[in-house]
Image 1 (spheres, rainbow, N blue to C red):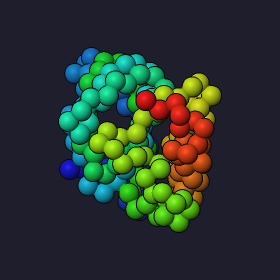
Image 2 (cartoon, rainbow, N blue to C red):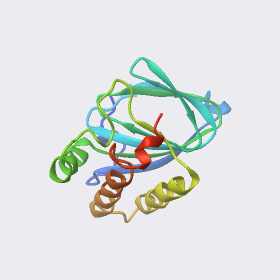
Image 3 (tube, helix red, strand yellow):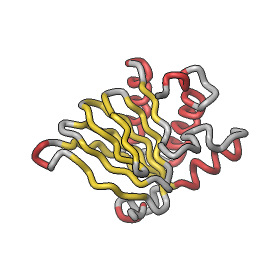
Length: 165
């Protein structure tokens, strides 16, 4: 299990990073779990597979995936470019319970985590939000604002949610 304290900056409840799984790195990332945080990632470029909870999801550019702290996941693929936002699980739970009737509407309650195939406009919208969170001066307010906008835009009851696989 990976802990948030292993790579979050001290005092910051989230972390943003960009990763490239390339042939020189073996083209994958081992299956792992998160002890205390959730994750949202966007495939920016490339194709591969998401190994998750004993299953397999194909991945390609424009896929947005919501990882719960209980999920065990890793990746297979070469030249897979991933933008990744990790945040303490309690943040999402608090927002969902406070503002939304169904706390699972954000990332689902099924065995495999929720995945959406985004169109170009939605990809650009997510990238803009990620850009703000990538800034070292980003604060908790910025994270909460982004997550609330994601709830609104991609919650299970939204029009865009129908694009999920």
